[in-house]
Image (cartoon, helix red, strand yellow):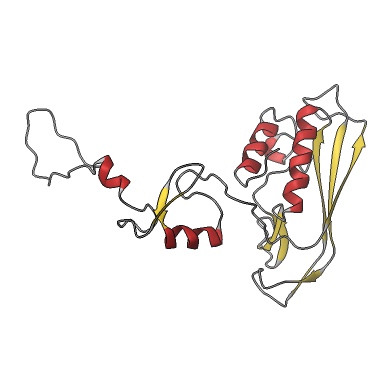
Length: 208
């Protein structure tokens, strides 16, 4: 941020001319140079050099400006299964609902070329998560199933809790792994959780 001077007074600093909107419109926001073979994305309308956006899409199929997702994103989650059951015990904040218990199961295996250490083994694991059995909870359940099918829910990397390397970890889609304890314990009550997790899923292209 440039320093301001009181109106009517001079400053020794060099004047910086703002970039006009027309100049910005002729510049690729990835390489910050004039367009070479300009390509405009069909839905959001943002433009880039063809080579820049093609390279960007190899790593992440999102518009670098607005994050609109193009195509289906497939993650590097190892092979596993998802299932769910219903509990009669309600979650805090949802006294009239049953509870959906999601179960994620992964056998042990060998890391593939898409993982940090190809050829090395990783341990299996089982994880549980909880949702209220109401309209919004069931919608989130369907979205989480879709995310799992696209291999986005887990990855192999460094555990944020134990520091262990080469283990199955959550991959930026927040789950409620406890029924109680509130947000600090990854539990309920948390009145905005169902909305937040839908926003996280939408950022990965997971919508109904």
